[in-house]
Image (cartoon, rainbow, N blue to C red; front, side, top):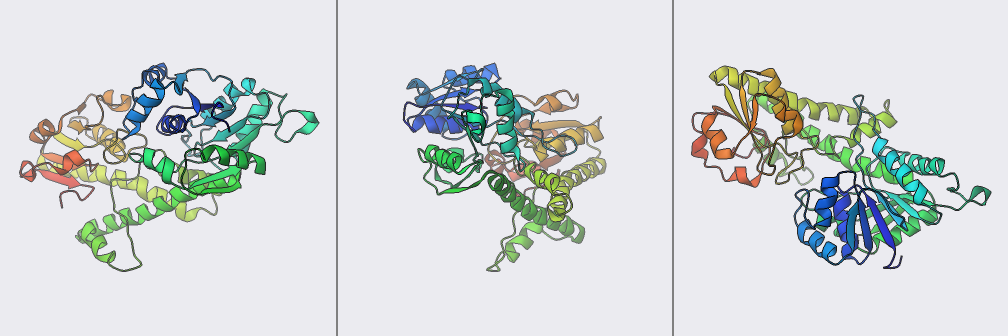
Length: 415
């Protein structure tokens, strides 16, 4: 791929925007596409629409250099990277509407020879379905050259980065590249070689799709073990964090840490894609999801008991993000716990403390008994303190302010 080639990245969220910025830093000419006009304007001004360490200065530099811009409509390009959401429906099946909409939006721009990469985490078969949607929208194209029609090259390269470390892991982590054809995989490899120092592992598209789901399901199963241990320890009056610390002294044991559940757009979602693909076989994966989802309900129950035991009408809920030191609230168990607690106790005032956001998300803002509060004020007002996220800001809280309060520490931060 030449430096003059244009790359279009569809979706300027937590994966798409860093990917666009890293490609632009590598010398590529990149256009980001998003339906959110505010996000487009923010990118064109060189300002971040969300929190991610080290992305701000890279974005500012590549926009100033003229190598990255943003728009709401995809232009013609040599390469398209689709990095749009793949949430699940109420029945836990994948909602592929964003992927298919992206496919339809770029299809009229394609003339043959282009490379289309799906980065969005997806159920097995989604890459081919996206490709077929492109061809159905633009019948002059083909996937195999049938009838002499020009060919497009389609591949899947799932992201595998950790929020808060995206700019490092985009470059350093190994990448799996699965093509619908060997040529598509080879072309995708050439693209990622421009910025990725990790090993580039070639396979077919379905294997690449399932590999990403496997990685996140592995994490989910192991977290479920820790969360189930925490329930057992509560029943037996044992300190679960001390128990895990002791068990991990075994040379072949590495138990993870429990928490209030599992969140984020990956681990809390992706295992369901495997369950949907093979429901009879995915028994352990399904159970792990149920354990982790059930942990949030358990925390709500403990908070309700604490309120009843103190007669208080105010709870301080510390944290809304799905993990520490970020502003990402997607599939966050903390957010779900606050919402459910407010619903269980409509007469209770819930002070939500989240230092990384400026306003409550819409589902919490509509609840009359939930307020966004600063930590000091919330702790002073509440008799029940619910620690849900181990943000660095909460680590520095003076323990004396917790004296006389009922404390539910789901992260073991104050043990």
